Length: 360
Ligand code: KG4
Ligand code: ZN
Image 1 (spheres, rainbow, N blue to C red):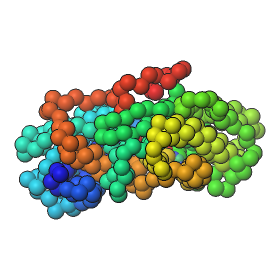
Image 2: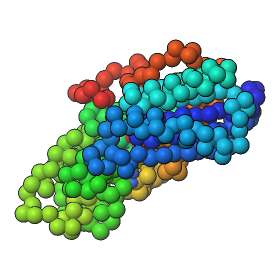
Image 3: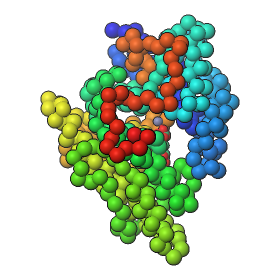
Image 4: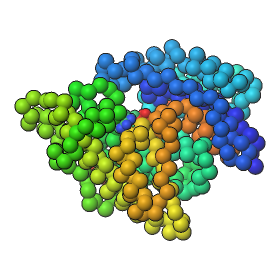
């Protein structure tokens, strides 16, 4: 059994500058000792999306202080750590380099192992930080950059069942919000407006419904929203609410149908599992309409639904530190030459989805 491991984690792959310290107890239990996240949303909001150069500069400016705060909150000295973990990809290259180079410097200065973490693997393993969860399980990752279903067979062992062939789900929320003149990030704002709207007023498409695979597509939905707006004489608050509600209903229906295919596939792959688990991670996991649809779907298919709390679904460094601990416990450490990787699929053997653009 590996000993207790204390790990510093660093996350700078997008627009959060984050540092955390976690402990992995010898019995596999996780404990968060400090989890500090500085969101750059205010820096990017005027531009309606994340500006890579602004993000990288903000990481440089804030990361040292955020790490010092995490170490202080955890009551730790560098000598107490067993490893230094940083997100090495996928993500924005400038930000990744800031976090990874910082982790390398700390690892070199303290002679501790470096753990160069795949950000998607960190999302995938988060539920195991929070409680016991054995392999295999099914992962639905829905964020601003990714929409994927993966079968998680073990640390480092992933099999992709589906991915988006165009926009990510969070991106669809953000682009719809932009079309409606709502602020960035759009997801929470669309959800708020949808509460007062009529979900039956606009008949938006349910992309890819009925297809036997588990892929996703959201760009047509965004186009349908654009056309609906163009057909209105002007846009009142009531129109905005109705569009948001109809859009959310279309998303919920689509995800129920598409993820349903993945649940059936996963059962066929693992006929021996009595009640498999669906884990949902990424910022869009905070969406209540989606959570409701997935709760119903899992009940129908006798799956357990595991959705970490929003602060651990959105980007954070506790998940990076935990993935580092899981890998270190297996003896999987990285050399100081480990590169930052803007593209780094979890399942390197997965074929591009049919008709997919570059992001899939
Ligand atoms: O995982 P995340 O914090 O960052 C990455 O993209 O890696 O996800 C952010 C995305 C954004 O697109 C945001 O609009 C979306 O998650 N999001 C939501 C909600 N909260 C965040 N989408 C729908 N409903 C929400 N409540
Ligand atoms: Zn993420």
